[in-house]
Image (cartoon, rainbow, N blue to C red; front, side):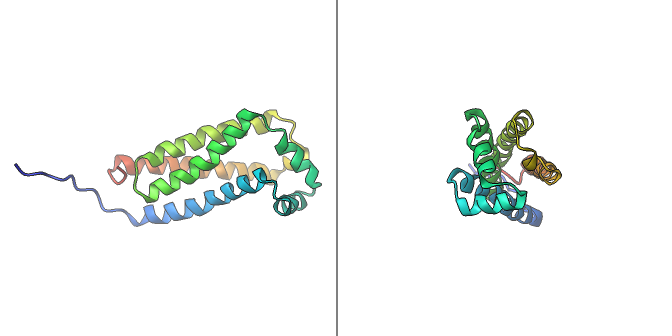
Length: 154
């Protein structure tokens, strides 16, 4: 009896490129999350200066996040990082991690629109940046699904 192994399609170059680029991009969000949760005053001070607000405005806003919003933020950030890593590992679970990230991002976006966000933190730049995050997470989830269907991810 001969054992047949299912041949896995060759990994396309774009998987490595998108995997590395998305990991770097999403690692920026992970850094923001960690620095905010650790209340790194140097980091938050730079963010406050960029937004043109006292650092207390940022501390108050993020300090008032309810539990569900914190969970959504964590899912969004860490799901995207995990999805990129799993993509590089050629795991079909990359799509699942990125889908969790979409759920987390949805919750975070809902909270941003229903909360009393200070106007200085609701700038046009923030809206454009949020749209860019949405685009990148959705695109990577779609890509992971396509690579799974093509048999590249298993």
